Length: 233
Image (cartoon, rainbow, N blue to C red; front, side, top):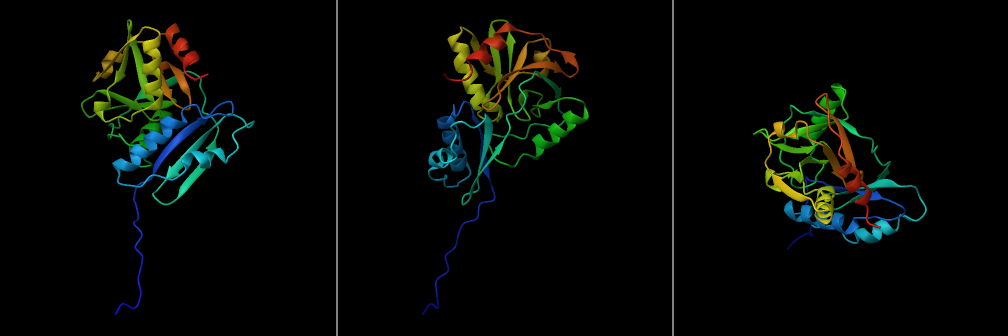
């Protein structure tokens, strides 16, 4: 005869997260964030949080200033915190010596990105640009990277193991609307030399790259065109 029953609760060693822009009292890409969070949970074998949209609505987004919400979920606890929107001034980037680790699921296991960011700051830059072990352009410490090759917009392929960026997806949509061909691929770092480039995130939108490895990056008016169209009306 059993003396009692003990309920076992599965403990997950992974935390998935999303950083969500609050803009003019709205969450412009909330459906995409929830979809990616659920996909991340499925990828690591974790149940998704329940009623995330309702939890965010409880925060009273109405008349409060623009900001970013960070949502973390470890399989049992949903934590939501707030932070200011990062600067949208043009960035100085440096190519990192830290190889891209493969990051197809947005989790808090970000040691390589933290090391790359620290390295960038030590070198007087804003952020770092990570390459794959084979030297292909992957993504930044906190962003997706895009650049122009003539009339073509180049973006690193998801096949490289980069994050399926919401900002990247939005830019690809807009590029089609303004008549730009988009070329996802595996591109060597040298192919960025002298090309107009920008970064994109679902929090910052589109932000131009001013310097790359100490060399000034040329300006392109199409960056402003994408930036102005980035946020849904």
